[in-house]
Length: 255
Length: 257
Image 1 (cartoon, rainbow over the protein chains, first blue to last red):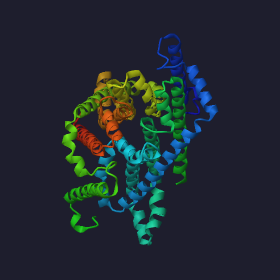
Image 2 (image 1 turned 90 degrees about the vertical axis):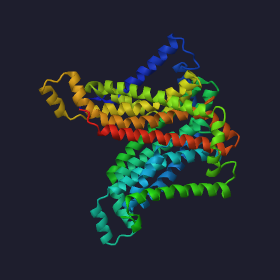
Image 3 (image 1 turned 90 degrees about the horizontal axis):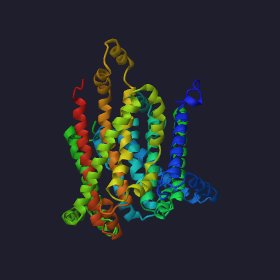
Image 4 (image 1 turned 120 degrees about the horizontal axis):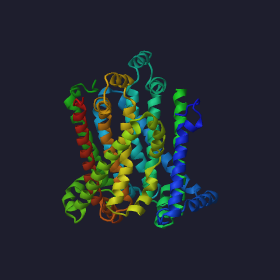
């Protein structure tokens, strides 16, 4: 954690920056002085040039839009359905106890296995990625949200019931406010998983999207372009992570 | 409290679960028979009836064997590497403060982006799957080992010093017992992560593994074989996970001091 009294050079970010610089130096020197195949490890300056070209040409807009749309659809489905299901499940301790092992069991199955099925059922376009993103992000959201609802103080629930709260009022005024930090961390995990699985699906088989660009440039043996796309995708994922961390902090404070 | 009084006993929960799974299977069966084109969805009765034909197909059993071998090697290497790196990062406070940000930086990078590079570097065969599995499996062990070393209560360090413990004794009687429970649970996470990595690499490109057959069955719209192939893999994954959970529970109960 960045400590203000320590200053930047002893902070967490400083070590990360130093590490990235070291990797870049190692990369540069190995392409310069070692005989590494440029197909495997192209010249970093060439990659930088291609990256600048790529950013300028705005060719990244469309794939980014496709990926974003897939992630948002998958996440919208899994969060809405997930929270709804958790709400229904968590109304009875008996139901939670009965279905918890099933949920955890399903969650242990690597859902990437179903990707070929989704590709068959929904085609190689957006449908199969949304289905994959949904399947992978749904269960962590359900498990976290159910646990979050389960930890609500029972005295609050009793009080609300005594005062004649309707189901909706119970959800809106009692369950949500006290469960929100844990729900948020489940949602965050879900969104990250949806992003990663959409990327994975696109890399494996697709027509468009960020993952597709990496896979396509690798198949075209255009290593410089592939590395440029990889750098771009990693930057997108770090931006997403940082934004989520900030949102989670804001959301946690607001609740 | 059960909503239905006669289902209140714990044994009845299992029954409800079974009924639930059975009704899902029934739903699948109906969907496949009446609503969806059989080219895309095959009913479970046909899928499971067809399993013997599928497994007798040349190469299918070998593909499962290859998957398990890739998984096993990736898992063993991940655990060894994760343990080693976790100790290296976690044992000394000053190195931990320097190295942890770097570990977290690497952990935050989506591994899928480097899958094509791994394929180019290690080929389409066995090696690339193992390597890609390791890139997933090493983190759970590494993170759990280093963070559990961090959580050792300071009073233990103080009393170890007071009683004049040697570095080995300190490791054996203080750090190790603190580390083991979370290490065991990280084993299961590492196995799941390795499996994910291996499967991603298989599905991306494969010449004779599971990925080869999924692609073949998808391309020929052989949904019966595809569902069968995947069902067996799902059962394998659940079995692996359940057996590791069982071992974890047993090891966690043992006294390690």
